[in-house]
Length: 523
Image (cartoon, rainbow, N blue to C red; front, side, top):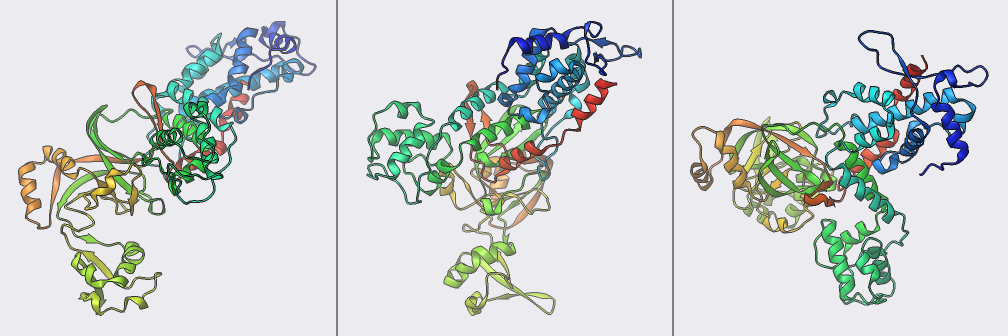
């Protein structure tokens, strides 16, 4: 929204900007000046609001908080008509709105998000009172708000992308029906024109190209490939169920992702100086970092949406060679039961063993003797373990980081899955593309161990565990928006809907600061 700089508003703001002694307050209203921080214990002084032009810029800037991902309606910006009818109340309301907006720009609209231990903020590093004092004394408060809005890392690039996505989201489109794949070269008089129109909303090259009508032509295929690459999908030009699902999602979803990305970066704590493991779950990427320096990076597989990897901050303490897998009850019930029903012999050949408890003792049962068809999917009465081996779900390495969710990092025999750009396939744990490289980094500070000795331990096929000489912090975090070199913004799908939940929290976050500041100013 832009403020209309009508002469009437300018005249009203001129009245508000005038010194208190020069104001003619409405009957029953005392003129109020904005307080300045007390100096050396002296009584607070008073400073007039800035001149009319600066006030116009301030009101205009508050009404443009959308460009920062904030909603101007949350800040109680006083109506311009109040400037003429009640200058004192207008001054109080305008300062309170400005202070609340400044506070959110500095500290984040959402100060605390339950279930998100991955969010690292350091509010103590910001002297918010100094900013509020400057707001009360500066001749150009709009410039101060601009400065606060650009504090987060990558804020300029994120704001530019937010403006672009808002413009895209304003363009209506019709959903693409059906889930069957649309292949290059196909003729589909219903879905191909809808696909072309949808991609053209964000692809100016396609929008300017000749319309091939119902034919899925090479120009449209190239545009689809660009779109798939930008959205972290398999770049093959085939428009299947996953691509159609993302194309049909509301365009406002990416607007919200950018708003969340800006807010999460506000008051973000600086990265720890010590060596650490960072796993960005929706980006399917693990990094070993030391300060700002990247030591190692690799692709990972994370939990699928119905078995989401939990966000957490823990420490990696031990390494297990040739680990067996104690299958969780849910995995046994939902994943293994159908396979036991089909072919229990094949399950035995893959190293799966079945146990029951008799007289308080665990006893092994031959899975070929069990009537698997009589077992329902609601309760699994056995314990299942998979022995270490080439076909083990955990591969040859398990990285132990104690936590209540039984989440760990591990190797995997399913190497082909790392070729896919979308890699949410696990039951919650993190599968590593290059587990041996992570092992080598961890052994650097483990006395008596080096890479050759570890490789011998792996080759022995015996299960063993070593404690690391120095545990490493591990953070499983959720960041769908990355600012890359040159300011390019890359947006990953919100696979667990955590950005959507954060956006809802931004809409409902209480702000007692507004009322508190209004009372403070009025005293």
